[in-house]
Image 1: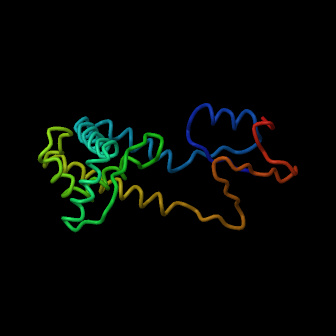
Image 2 (image 1 turned 60 degrees about the vertical axis):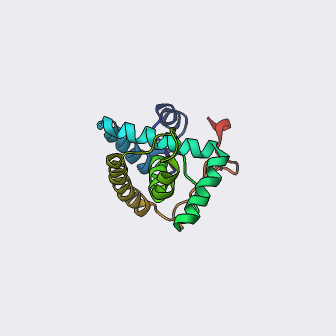
Length: 178
């Protein structure tokens, strides 16, 4: 059988099931990420931390002047020269990567924000919440990394945009087949 792994979107699931003879398999990583996002919604205090982290990250990503100053602060404090990462809702674990990078740059970012009215820095208890969330998400990412099966002889993996070839036909399987 041919398996198609996709996210859990109803339209994609329905298309695979109704227009192909392939077996649909929901993506484990996507399913876990949906569970994590649902769980995080149960803690409204996390939203404030995420919003502040996003505001700080967005500020530095949009201000070339402050980005240069942040790089100078990183050098001054002897931290690695890194760029802040923005959350992207369609990228799995991007919220974790945003928090992790912000935590990596906590000292230089805090030093920069101490003399600025906006954006507001995280409060000490918010930094602790961010650390806790990042630790939990790090554990989940570790599990997801361990569940990835390397491409082997008995399975073929295709990246988004690549067309698999039907083993009974010589042409790619694509929208024209649906």
